[in-house]
Image (cartoon, rainbow, N blue to C red; front, side, top):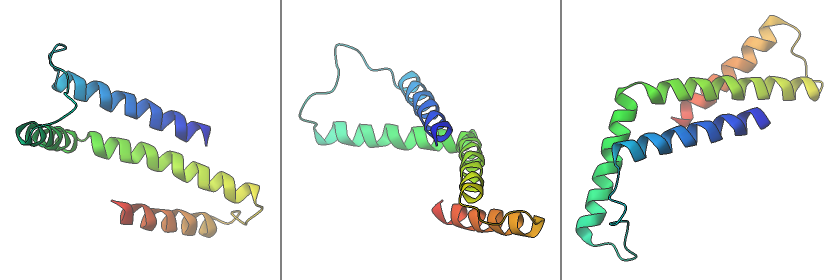
Length: 107
C-alpha cells in the first residue's frame, strides 16, 4: 500500500508541475476570490486543453499501466496474506482477468 501511495504522490507532483509549466500565471495576477464568468470559462478551457494534451501524448496510458501494475501486485499480496489459493497458474490468470475487467470498467 505504501508503494501505491508513493506512486500516486509522484504522479500528482508530475501532473501539477506539467500543468503549471503549461499555464504559468502572472504571479501578481493570481486568482481572485470571486471569479467572473469569463475567468471560469478560461479555466475550463485550460483544463480541457491540458487533458487533451495529457491523453494525446500517451501520458494517461503510461500512468494507467503503472497504477495497474501496482494494484495487481497489492491484490496478489493480499490474496497470499489471506491464505487464498494462488498456486496454480489458472488461479493466477483468473485473478488477473478479474482485475483487468474491473480496471477496464473504471476508465
